[in-house]
Length: 340
Image (cartoon, rainbow, N blue to C red; front, side, top):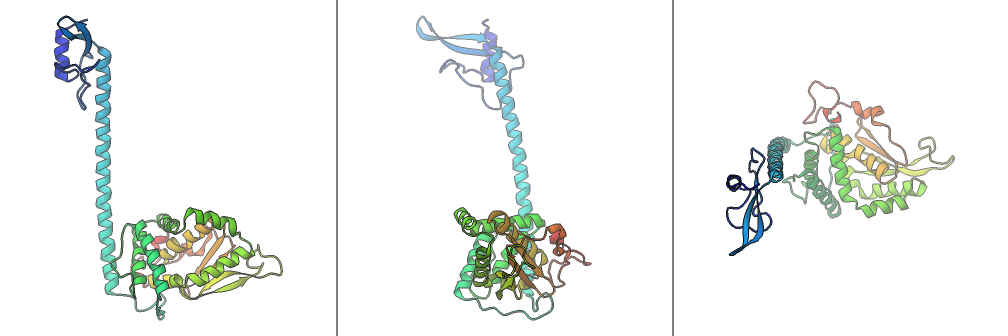
């Protein structure tokens, strides 16, 4: 059926071009174009004719109109989807900016009034980090900041270096639940250990005497920059069931007074950024059970390699209240809100 009126309507709708055919279909429907209301359109085809290499034949084509309508409908749906995503993204950005402003305001107050005592009211341990300590602190701080998407303005070198790392730690857990904080810390640990290193660890170090003792020794030698003074301790079968009767494994590390806990004064940071992710990393990823047992009464901690950790639902730390010196302590007492 040939209809000149239909052809003119097709030109107005943009379904076909007004004069220049460029193939079996002269022009494709423009994006966002409304479909033909009566589901008819014209199709320009190339056909030989006298006096001209081609002539235009207008053919009523309901199928083409239906196709044009479908494309236009999908385009509108796609536009709505992108608008919704843009609105959500803008809301996330605004929330992130507001959260960062709150974090930086909190840290400015912390810098103005640094702690004079430890969380229990005792004297702060004085640390003099050597170049190797500062290098380790810088490495941890850089990886942590890449996960937190924020960096402290404190110096990387000198007496401010450790406090700068703690400020990035605050950013890791700021406005997050305990599980979210643990996941952030896991991302930091993942960034520090390459996949090849994990595979070699799982292959070479089993939870036997050699593996547990080597881990304890490495921790006591290389991690005082993070946790302070520590020493290796023995464990018998009474403490660690996997130890054979009559043997003693030097598989535990006693941290005398945890530097991380002393300087942060935060129970939530202890659980969310250290205890839980470390137990999870060693146990689930590296195949080496690890139980971390912090003592909030003297700020010490014991790490026992080869020991399965207490389930969180049964862990006494789960109900630990905030220290009175914690800047984000829950008013009126009760369980630290960062443990929820």
